[in-house]
Each structure stands twice: as structure tokens, then as C-alpha cells.
Amino acid sequence: MDKTQSDLVEGYKLETEFFQDHVRHTRYVEKAENRNRKVKEDWSNCGELGRGGFGVVYRQIQKATGRYRAVKAIDRRQASRLDCSRELLVMAKLANYPSLFVRFLGWFEGPETLYIAMEYLEECDLTKHISTPLSQETVQNISKQILEGLKVMHQEGITHRDIKPANIFVVSMSPVRVKLGDFGASKWIQAPDTTTLHTQVSTPLYGAPEVLGLDSNSETSDYTNSVDIWSLGCVIYELLVGKRLFASWDQVSRYFFGKRPFPEDSLRGLSRPTDDAGVSLLKSMLSIQPGGRPTAADALNDVWLAGLTSNKEHRGGDEGRTPPRWDERTHIRKRKNRPASRSRREKRRSKRGPPTGDDTGCMTGDVGLGMNPRSQGSGEPSPLKL
Image (cartoon, rainbow, N blue to C red; front, top):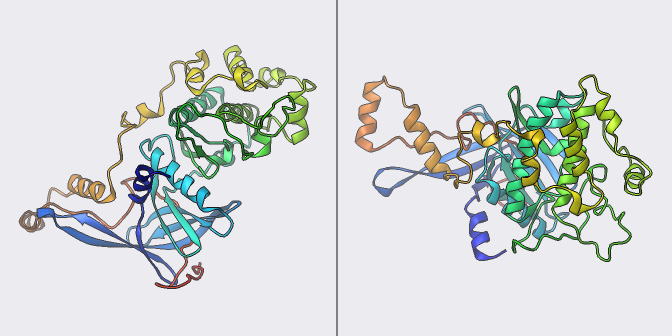
């Protein structure tokens, strides 16, 4: 990680104290005359959201405000420092696109654990919404929004490498609003023209043939960001049909070697059949040859997705702007939300400068992700009590 990247990540670090049943962040909120005011916020663990290979994701509440966040606790004894740094770097880079990716709220660390704070999305991920086939229009909207995220990632030289329903988070199903998350498997390649990858990371049932090692003719184990397109193709099929395209590694192998045809009949045999344009796009995304798959940008221009409203348009077109730091956000938010009445309070505020903000780390309307901070103030932290 070069100095620019290191500075980017360091800018999101939260000043933190660990206690037996909560953690406390200290933030510095801008006041008048270039002075800062310390604001302390306490977060307590209130549930577990999920487990992964290297850690646990917890829901956490700030009792003073009733706000939630999600915190991913990564055990550094199992995950390498390189993996931890890479995930932070990717999240910091993608924080410029809050409508496309789960919002990054900062990070902090204990002796053996890295904690990543994120927005909490009450609707959870797509796995909670796909017990039955979704309408073609709903799937089209989900597909477009995820492709918008992949387009940004690929342009930045980042490959997600683990696209699956569990990593697509739902803001709302009506209207459809989703975001990409879980960047633990992502890789950021510094040189824009260096797009080959080597390690096998994808969840097998959504992994491209080249990731799973099925291409015996390949002289190397390299693959490109087209693996994300394959994985999204598997997800789109599952959303349309209501069941996984591949239920086992053997089925992927048979498809790769031509012993299992593209499931066109399943798509056309639905009570609301997938139209020709949808079948055609999906077939290209599931090409066994990486070069035969469209890029994210090409897929977005496909006729099947034409005319759909983008996530950027839903959010007012502010993508790509560097998000303000916490003190700037709360300063602006409080000023906007200040009541018109209470004239005596207004007079007091006018004497001591602009209002400074409340004690939350989330944007207005956000609910954030949660964690199990461990601790006592010093030394080796102990697990939080639920």
C-alpha cells in the first residue's frame, strides 16, 4: 500500500476506547473560530448478523439515539494483514459511491481484531427475498444496479470475486434499491491495465469455470474481472427462476464441457417467461470463454436494461464525490434540521457559533451495521456481553 492509499485508509480510522460492554468513539466536531469540540459516542453489541471465514458481523446500537450500525470483526490471527489492509482500501475507495455500495463508516482495531463499521440495512441481503421467482422487471432493476457497481469497481481496477445473493444488500424492494457489499475477497490492482488475477476466491456455486480450475487448456491460472460477470449471471438466473443455476461443482463442470446445455427452457417456461433480450444477455454472461462475456459497461447498454432508472438517479446524481468527514456531515445536518422555534436557544447558539452536530456516526436516515468490540480500556479486550 503506497502513502496515498495509506492516507486514504487512515482518514477513516475511529479513535476508540474499549469497555466491557461497549466501545466509545471520540470525534472532533468543528466549532467557530477554528476550534473543535469533542463528541463521544457509545456503541453496544445487540445481536449477531452473520459469520464468515475470518470473522463475525454484529449489529450494534447507539442507545443515546437508537441508531444501528453493522460491524465486521475480523480475527487477524486467521486473516493476513495484507487481506485486512486490502479490504479497508477497497471500502475507502468505494465510499465515494454510497448509492452503489454498503456505506463505510470507519474502522478501528484491537490487539488481535480489526473492526469495520458499516451501515446496517434492515432488509438484509437478497437471500431473504428469493424463495420464489422475482418478476422480470424487479430482476432487471437489480441487475442494472449491480452492474453499475461492477462498472465502477472494474474501472477502478477492483474485482469483487464473490458476487452472490448474500453479498447483495437490500435497501428496499419497492422501489427496488440494492447495494454491493462484503469486499473481503476483492482485489485492487494498482495498474489499470493489469487485470489478471490468480487466487481462487469465489463461492464455488457462483464461481466462473476459470476460477474453479476447469480450463485445463489454460497455461496459467490467471483470470480477469469477467469472473464477476459470470457470477452475476448465476445470480440473475436464480432471481428469475427461483433456484440456483448450479447446485454442485459437477454441474458447473458438465456445463463447461458441453454436457449440460444453457437452461433456456427454464427461463422461457416460467409463468412470466423471460423475454428474448433477457435470455440473450444471460447467455452471453454465462459464456464459458471469459472473452465472450460482456463487460459491465457493455451489459448496461444491453437492450434488456435500456430505459431503467439508475441507482445514481435515485440518489440525486452525487456519485463520485468524496463523502464529507463525520464532523462536516453532522455540522451541516444539524444546521439544516435546526427547529425554527426555540428562539432563546437560537440566540445562545448565535453567540457561540454554528451548531455542531449530534452524537451519531450515521447520516440522517441511515441505519448502520454492528459488531462485537472487545475490551477493557487497555490490554487484551474481552468479548462483549450480549
